Amino acid sequence: MRILILTHPRSGGMSLLQFITLTLNYQKELNYQMYHEPFGDSDSSLTNKDINTKLLINENIVVKDFIFNITSRGFNIVDVVSKFDKVIIHHRGNHRDVAISLLYIQENDATKIHKTYKVSDEWIKDNEDKIEQMMVDTKEMFYETQSIKNENCIRTTYDGIYNDKSDVPKLLKFLNITNSRHLDILDNRHRLQNGNIGMDNIIIVQVPPKLI
Image 1 (cartoon, rainbow, N blue to C red):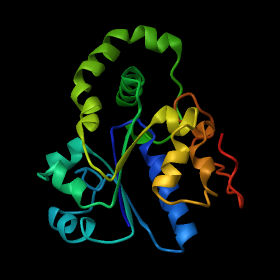
Image 2 (cartoon, rainbow, N blue to C red):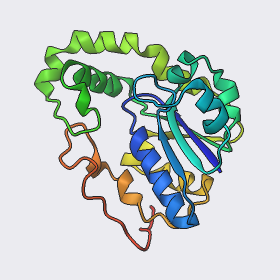
Image 3 (tube, rainbow, N blue to C red):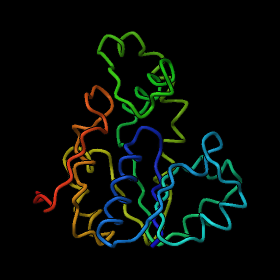
Image 4 (cartoon, rainbow, N blue to C red):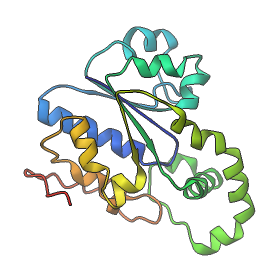
């Protein structure tokens, strides 16, 4: 099975990618390969040829990326989406929260983008104008995932995965996951903004907890 997570920055997409890959590998005893933003220019070791001959063909892979990464490499988003068996359209829902997170990382230490960080009410108040501008600058990026249409896709949100959990049963059913022993990855105690532990101390359970 080939799985694609289409999202935007600061949405919890990396944790979702890790959860899906680890869970499928345990349940199906397969070696699912995880690709984190392979279309991005900065950290990707994949050339366009690699993407065409490997990423868009290989079985048992889970890919998480952004639409603007895909299109900026010259790929057609509709064509790329069509190459996957399962597509998850994931977004944070609250544009302001995304803007705050992006601005804070941009103005502090971008190398710690996947580490915990503290954002105080005072910092937000002092940077209101910049936050508003960030929302303007990222408006197209934030909303473009909602325009993607695919019959094999589901839509999930940050709140539905990490907070009220309303999207978790839907996600498990969509991917035919019956043993979610890595479910703690999706617990909001691992949040990065104003969190403490980040992605450390993941609890692996043998019996999946009851989902309410």
